Length: 93
Image (tube, rainbow, N blue to C red; front, side, top):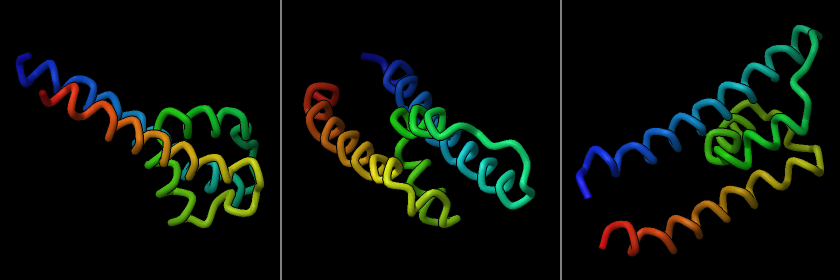
């Protein structure tokens, strides 16, 4: 497989993590300004797709770290990591 085709999923995945980081950051800013917020379900959906960006924003901004629902975000990150470990030999081989 050509290298450029291998970079497409990596680029999309990086974009999803950047999007998750951006949405969590935006929600934190909106909470400080007491404006309308992004729904928790929307944040969790984005976190399921880009957990590393969401987790970075949560820890860096101390945002949503006390909400029980958001304990799922580290679980999403672990599941993604396990998926990468499982898929890497198939993709690299």
